[in-house]
Length: 336
Ligand code: ADP
Ligand code: MG
Image (tube, rainbow, N blue to C red; front, top):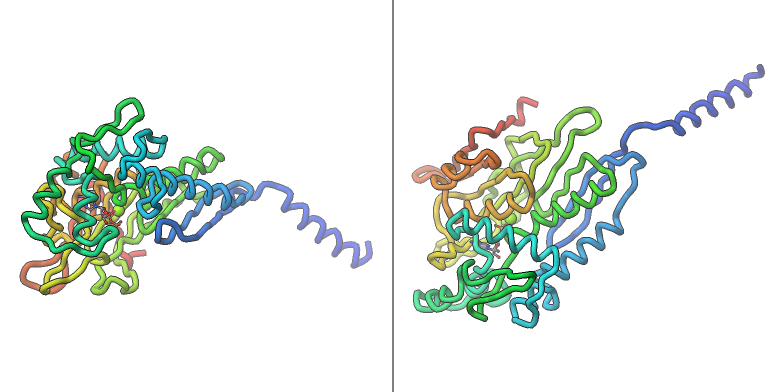
């Protein structure tokens, strides 16, 4: 055989190899949605990129649940122009109501009028005083709204919903379910820090997630010291160190206690919650910010389906402390 023939044969054989199955390909899709960044990673046999389908899911999602789109179903329900819900709305509403009951109203989607009045919604912060808060509390409360045969029923027509503390996690679930419908078994869908992960990677390893440490300024770069490994779990973080405002040297959190009507003010700086799905993790994270450290630890330890990582400020020193619930295995960055 001449030399050139050998070369051709080798090239042909190499080419032929790619005709055989090479194992799942990793796909990463990144973009912007709900005013934040998303990142979707998954393993797919042929490396198919489902960008268009994902864009259209986000679009449908916004049409249903967006707080910013004045024509979304949520906005129309808030203005009492519509009462009939769609499947996205129904799922989020039902889970929101369940978590409100479980947390004694610490999580409450009807908190919207207060969120708005405190300046975390559409309007400038109102001049807040006890009288104003009491007047708003008259139509805040998850018992004042219900879903009956697919229709929203309000006890007071001023009741308005805010799904900001649950919709991001749910969107991660919805994208995950879409990927599963395409046969994808291993994925990580992350939207603005909240995520849903499933499956082991082809080499048998788990998804690794760094736990962010508090930043001094809202726009400081993200840093982490510990990471966790997860297989099938949702994870969401709520904290007041990136979204707050300061007045009279006091920090006002964007998490509102639906019972008192005031922004929460205690030493809990952030909580990361691990749950069976992104939607639950998202909502519990906000609930725990309202409940505070001690009550939340008791709540999580009594449940098999939840774990949490808390960061709190220390009373008489600078810096912060952390607490992780008993089922959570933190791996230090140095020990990699
Ligand atoms: P982030 O938006 O930083 O992920 P959260 O998931 O905790 O934070 O959501 C905070 C948003 O949830 C607030 O901006 C507000 O719209 C809404 N919210 C505030 N307090 C509550 C509460 N007690 N229950 C439900 N939603 C809340
Ligand atoms: Mg959240």
